[in-house]
Amino acid sequence: MNNNNIKIGAFFMFISVSGFALMDICVKWLGEDYSVGYVVFWRMLGGLIPLVFTIPKDRWSSLFKTSKPGLHFIRAFTGTVALFCVYTSLHYLPLATTVSLTFASPIFTTLLSIFILGEVVRSRRWTAIIIGFIGVLIIVNPTSTEFNLYMIFPILFCIFFSIVAISIRKLTESEPTYQIAMYFSLFALIASLFTIPFGGWVLWPLSLFDLGILILVGVSGGIGNLALTQSYKNAEVSLVTPLKYLSLIYAVIFGYLIWNEIPAWNTYIGALFIIISSLTILRREKILKKEIEPEKYVIRR
Image (cartoon, rainbow, N blue to C red; front, side, top):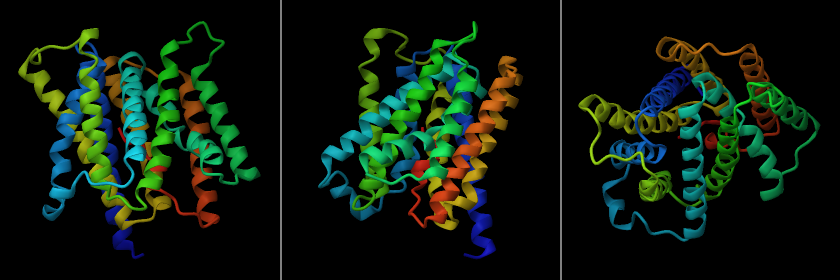
């Protein structure tokens, strides 16, 4: 792999992180006036725009033909639940807190891989897992009087996203990525409609500005996913994945500028523990020469 490819991979990872960060900011902004289900609907609707351009013209007729419908359902269902969890978290928690906790996804994926895939995890990765959980506990701080019950949602996101990662790992053995994404997008789009009876939906956004923000949620998230794919096509996961932690810098800056959020000390310390844990797991898997799946280490919302 030459330096040129590494630079291209890093560039696309930066675009991906920026896209997801913009999406998170938009979702939090919309939380004041719209329900989670309504925002999810627009996320998936807008996300279809960049997705359709990735589907080869000769594959449209067989787009939904698959030999693994059950696995597609598991990926789509758990992905939808994960999306609702992280959007709920963005509505009710500081931006930096949500982003920090979602960094724990690789920890839960490694744990679930033991039980679902029968993977062997040795002492160094167990140490990394323990460090990661300490980081989660530091951020959540369950014994504090300021404990927020909504902190359970980013943790639930990590758990369900871990199942998504494992499902994608199995699906990509035979299914194209655009098909996996299309099944998920349509499932989440339809699932969001079932939240209409719970309120928070309007026939049309309250203003043209809100309409633009809702469309931006979908487009920025879609671009984030596409850029992520391009990043991993050009560079090794281990070389570009650390750039994803730039999203915490975005969260701290824009959380303060827009909502006057100042993260507590435990958020920074806990995030550091989680980042060290995730990078250690990534490094150990590279040393063990295991195939590292991009979806295992990157937050895809």
